[in-house]
Amino acid sequence: MGISIELEVNGASVSEEVEPRLLLAHLLREELGLTGTKIGCDTSQCGSCTILLDGQAVKSCTVLAVQADGSEITTIEGLANGEYHPMQQAFWDNHGLQCGFCTPGMIISCVDLLSTNPQPSEDEIRHGLEGNLCRCTGYHNIVRAVQTAAETMNG
Image (cartoon, rainbow, N blue to C red; front, side):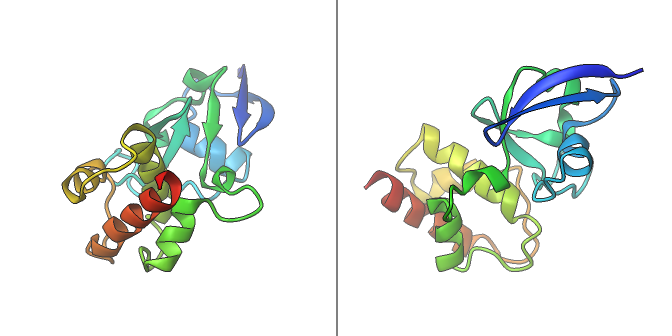
């Protein structure tokens, strides 16, 4: 028997009936078709499933869908509003992605970082990225992308 939940996902109201044990990551990907939210490890280690839940970055593989009832969710698909979000553009311009698997979670985490620290130092950026794993880039270009986005977004 399912439980009815209501969410706002990327600005749209969503009503779903879900099993109590369904993870939010699976709801987003499998039921709502928002495949930008990646599932990399199922153990909350990689950060590929990071979304904004009520404005804060969380790993959606650690949240049951029923726990998100009444919440506002933003996925990578919801960041763009007709054009790239400044963080997405900065990742593109600074070659902050390679295979792209970790990129949605990285970008969401970085957006959250800049919401609380608009002008982070390099050390603060690297600390803010802890919990998001990338096997391709070595993080240098990701850090540069965050610095560029901070300049663009916050002058």
